[in-house]
Structure formats: structure tokens, C-alpha cells
Length: 316
Image 1: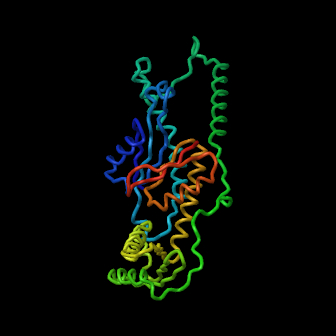
Image 2 (image 1 turned 180 degrees about the horizontal axis):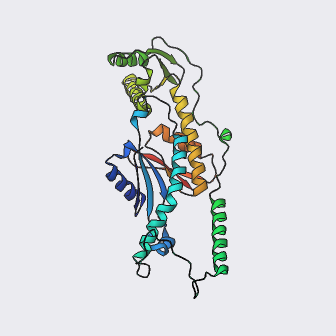
């Protein structure tokens, strides 16, 4: 899968550089923040190390049939794990080059291993070597404790989506008739049934072409629902919400988003780095925000402009 890892003075610059290298737009990629620049006094002390690092990966559209449930939670977890394995060497080399520009280290080669200082005669000081190994082991043990994965009981997370209750068949549904006319002009083979309760009109779509009605990540379904809402409530004295679902797709998508939110929250709590999700519509962002309000230690925010507005998960 095509990807690029870039450094920048901030996350946005690193993402821009990666997009330029890949020749892609932001809506065609998935962004993972591998390292953020230090802020405040810590950033001033770090000097040349005050940078951000991101991994920008192309989303393979051919692997996503229209309406296919996303398995982003597992995919992003695997990608983050792979990125952590390769990050250590890349960051180390970058910092060695940065130190080399300072003067005293300028002659050091990027991949040249420095030998221990030896006393006269060429013999190594065993005590100093042992001390170095002990320090290395201590750092490794500390790093292991720091990277220990945080556990979150997903079963304790309450579903944030509302349940539509008391639906009754509505064969004369104006919303269902409008949607049937639109989909009929699209030449799709589906069946449309209308239901209603006191709060909304509900339309269920089934059939062999139902995946086409969903579209990529639900975009076609959202567009049809928006148009049906406009047409149904035009000139109406009282607004009545229209909800369209295709063979239970919305419930499955919401569950996938909740699982994705919890998995990324675990990553953020484990390694301390923020996570940037793909652009989502307002309702899907609401699912992410509401789910992670139930998880201690993380906070969420949205950034960007529609339709590329996305959720950022950060450690408190």
C-alpha cells in the first residue's frame, strides 16, 4: 500500500509535504501522527528536534466495495504497530544528522556506530562497558513499562446511538414515495418500505443493488437522506425527520466507529501520541466524541472544514 512518512515544523506541514510527494488529496489518504513537536519551554530546549512526524497512507478504493463495512479499527491498529517498529531507526538517523550540523559532531556519518573509548593499548574498559549495558537494559525496561498497552473494557461502553421505537408500516409515506422515484431513475433493483412513529419517518431499503444505495462509506446514503428530508419537509408546518437505512447498515457502521474510537484511544493512552481520524460527516463525528466521553484519560476535538472535517483524539 502506498504511503509516505514526513517531518515538518508542525503536523499540518508534515501532512502537506507527504500529500505533495504522493500526489494525493487529503480525502484520499489516512493520516497517523507518529510524533508531535514539543511545546513551550521544552520545545525551546529541544532545538532542532522540535518537529512533527506523520505517516500518510493512500486509501485503496478498489478494496472497498460500495457499502462494505469498514474494518478501520484493526487496520489502523496494525498500521500503527508497524509504524512504531520502523519509527525508532528513522527518528534516530534524523537526530544524528541534526546534531551533525552543530559543529563538533559534523564529521559523524549517519549510520556509523561509535566504538567505546578505549585506554592505551587498545583494551576496552570492562567496567565502563558493563555500565553502558546496564544503562541500556534500564532504558529498555523503562521503555517497556511506558509502552505497555492500556486496557479498556469495550463492553462497559454504552451505545450512544438512539433506538427508533414504535414504528408502524406507512404505505402512503411521502418520503418513501419520493425516494422510490429517485432510486427508480437510477435504475437500481431495490425494494423500499416506509414506516413512521410520532417523531420520524423511517425508510428501509433492501435488494440486490442495496450496496450502490449505500455508496462509499455511506456517502450516497447520506446524500439521499438529505435530499429526502428537504423534499418531504418543503412547505410543511412542522418538521419531521426522515431516516433511511439499508439492511441495517447504520447500526453496523455505528458499532464499527465505536470500536475504532476505543482502539485508537488505547493507542493514545499507551504511547501518548494523538490520533487523527479520516474525515467524517457530523453524525459520525458525534458518535466518536460521545463514545470517548466515557473513556478516562483522553479528550477529543474536531478540526478542518466540511467535508474534510475530522476528529482528533488526544491524551489529557
